[in-house]
Length: 238
Picture: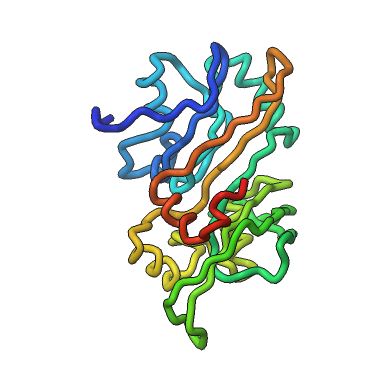
């Protein structure tokens, strides 16, 4: 691993677990999909913290934000049970093309499990509109291009669920090269924003040893913050 890799921000930590702010562009761990990658969240944290870690859940390579880890097998097992029981509450921020007609809406659309997993399972995502923005860039028959800042929460955790649900309703996620719209991605690249605009903003869970409710909030990086600045006053909404 390169010595130039910066430390990962620790949002919350104690002797048994931590919540970290995963940078965009960093894969969580080595897998069949990681060919050619050299930097992994797991390895960076092992070197940074000087001890073994267990990743409790994963984020896509291009997604930033809250990621939960444990430092021992017992804690990992207890947190894993919370994951299986859908007891981790996650809040995501996304920037998508277009303006949805409703300020709050739900996408209930079954999804398969990704490559090689064709069986579809229920998938439900709840969206809340946090802000609207408009760029003076023509799109199709329109004089401008419109964008939305969305909050997303999930009842299920399917493969690339938010990204695929946004595509399904034609509000493609900005910066998504697999399920997005290249024309809108280019608009943001011209603004110096080259990352996928999906961020795991907040994570809440019950500490498996103390019973305390842990509420972790991850700040966005410079590029995501530049995108949020397009939304003017709405940028201050929490």
